[in-house]
Amino acid sequence: MAAAERGTEGPADRRPAPTATHLSRLRVRDVRTYVEADVDLGPGLTVVAGPNGAGKTNLLEAAYLACTGRSFRQASDADLVRRGAEAGNAAATVVTATGPSVFSVGIDPGAPRGRRLRVDGTPVETLLDHPARPRMSVFLPDRMVLVKGGPALRRAHLDQLLAVLRPASSPVRRAFHESLRQRNALLASLKARGVGGERAAQELAPWDRTLAAGAAGLTRARRETAEAIRPAVNARAEQLGLAGELEISYRPRASEDPDEVLAALVERHAGDVERGFTHHGPHRDDLAVRRDGRLITRFGSQGEQRLSLLALLLGEADVMEDATGSRPVLLLDDVMSELDADRRARLVELIRERGQALVTVTEASHVPGADDPGIGRIDVVPGAATATAVAADRGDG
Image (tube, one colour):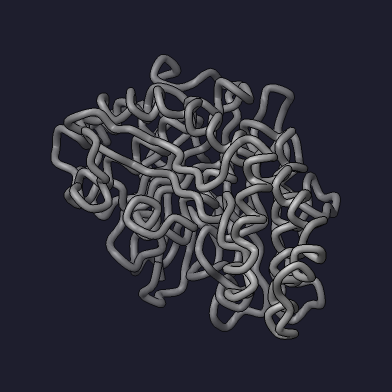
């Protein structure tokens, strides 16, 4: 068994304004290791402390699930429902300037639709478009692949940020990916049929023009987004104590001029037909993270890479707050490991500035100032028989 209990809330002068968008309550039933959980949350920093395997990450995942309808881990419905249970549910009370709303997700792996999404008890098709839904920014040890991994993950991350900061660009992004899918299907067909030369050029011409227009627009939107976050990310890196200048730069493969993109696509017809897919365009772009001009993926230590990811997430949160008027809720899992005492103190000071944050640690003492009454506390304790939240002892999460 495992349990979670809410600690004492602190004085108002160390917390965001009461109207700041935040989760005030989280209720979980039969999700992951939890049989039942019911915890209150303050609008500022909350430390979620407990030994490995107690269910700390699962609690953060339940919060994310309740507000988005999705897991932040690759998980099927069967994975999310507690072993031995038939269905599960996660619900979050979200407080905004206009009042509270309850977001809930019911999970039934045996049901035809799987997940049942509701806002204030009313079924909805998606939670993502609801005006009261809080944005959420997640740090997981697995997300280090954003810094250390391949460009596809960074492109996807940039596009998610683009959707928040520049929602008007969504049709351009969708049009590009649809035209890329259609052009690739045609290229695969041309390759299979052994068609090349002028005939292939004629069949590709309509998709070349459509793809060129979408590629130019998406490249421009991505560049502008990367430029928008760069100052905030660099400022946060400096505040976190990352030595040197952290530079976020967009590395496009295509031009922002549709005519130039079209010419490049036409020039590559023979190679694209031979490969059976489109080789040129923003689907091959990257977001480079450098410190003092050197790629941090190759030349940064584990601690420096972790700081760069934190700077990226915190800087993005600043820009999102400026653009939308609402700061994302930060879900920070195992964030303190591999940071020295000075960097931990800097991080705590930054995330206490404004907005809500949930931070998991194995020992509360890993969070400088954790005993401050202005910091909330949830203790996840294996072996507890009665408490606010009770989970099966499965030894994961």
